[in-house]
Length: 425
Image (cartoon, rainbow, N blue to C red):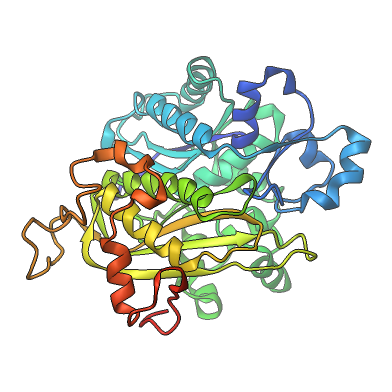
């Protein structure tokens, strides 16, 4: 596409914090952090907390004194809420451009291509988008507009950091001189894809600002840093190098996990969240039109309690037939859990993994399958039961998966199942 593009990046401000405040309006204006699954580290910070110098990933226990001093509140992460709000956010943005002109980049970011709408004032449009998302979804957003994705990301950052832009920055209305002067106000590490170590090397070369990087020769930087840096500099110069993706690429791995509300001790207790996590993972698998050829399960004890015995195993197993069937995947997951579990530990987290993902319909079935691949029933206890069967007690699970693992391991007996020595482990 040779004609100049006008690409907008719409980004939710402090997404997780904003979602929590939407559910708890009393937290508006209160310094707030959202913690990771184990309530260990900060994964989101409000503007008030950022102003205190708290970095992303800071362990919560290191902030206790600061939290008392400034009244910082902490919330456990709620990814079901964030996912739901993300779907609403992207649905609102879908009304502004044709489907092929919307690219969902992440849970809280979305690119919109306004090419061909040359008469549209994108500053006013950006303000209208901000108002609509706030009114319909309740989330605050910023909008940045540029001729490339990298420039749109930079413009979005400018709109957030400089109040005079009102949360909407359109670089396409600026002259080249004004755009470069604006870039000179921001350090080079603010460029999309430039991390701390790379920024240090660029500063050593005399490129301390975004503007300095935009003025540099992309060919010469390629010789030292590679083709990715060449593309970044070209994008800053208005040359589009990053492809537009109408459909997000299919995931190569799906993981579903969450910390327990408190420590769990028995196999039956842990089996319930493992079933739930596999149900979520299977739903995501079907949504992207894939089947899984490998299932994994992991357990974790609390590494922050060194006085406790530690045991954090992780195992996976190749399936006889790739599938997207929830009941089948749950059966294998619980079978693996039975092989992993050891009594006498305080388990705080469990999770499941789906690997070897491939498009549905393009995988090879087993020679002995009486049913189509992906629909193989593993036992009468689940066959035909649908989702309602997923909540059965551990003892009611079909025994086929256990028997196959038992057989593959050379006849280990019930409670002594171990996957050590199994190929691929």
